[in-house]
Picture 1 (spheres, rainbow, N blue to C red):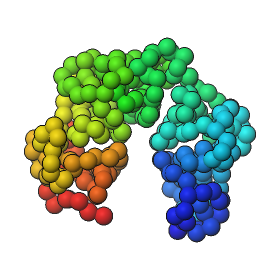
Picture 2 (cartoon, helix red, strand yellow):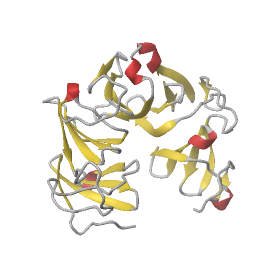
Picture 3 (tube, rainbow, N blue to C red):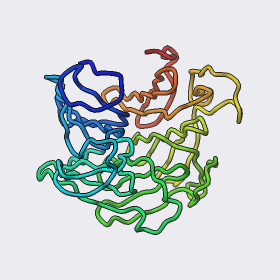
Picture 4 (cartoon, rainbow, N blue to C red):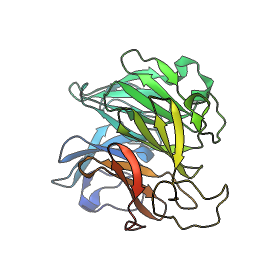
Length: 288
């Protein structure tokens, strides 16, 4: 499949298709993918066998940023934030919309509903949520803002702040309750009790231990303002990320326990043994 590189909108097959600001995607099955076309304010459906793209949910009109619930075709999204969550137990997709509402898309009924209005919790430090993730048990969402990590219990919709309740970005390791983040952009569960976060502006990976409620850093920048633009491979005590880490993307390959880290200028891989980050593959420097 090939697509036109000029932003816009068009459903179709192959190079007839036009997207605008793709921010995330999720696989429904081996052949079907749902894409977050944030620039057009909608979700798109891609059939990998035919290369055909069609509108999945929303209006797909960059000039209409209203938001409302309803059928997939009638629903409107204001600005879908990044990744799409697949919740297998509920047979639903979840997205974080620009009006700070978590939307649920029921795959059986083809209906969009407002699952939770984050602003209704009245927590000022959650004013600008950016990313939403699902834990392996599918019982909790984990929410990242520019400065903190929070947990949302799906059954009760209760919100718990896990890091320091502040809207100020910064850096602090140690107890999770006093920890600080700086524009985190990715999160994966290494196991049910260990989270790895890409802390973008702090240029490091953060390891959250949910049992001890602590956070630590690996692959840290060599200084506060490093001058080197070259990453360093090696074990987690010596490895570093590049000088400017621009929204690193984390993907975990289950079958060989390797974490793929997409950063500016290339791709790194982090070996994971028994659910713990151990070392960077020394033969896996930047490659495309």
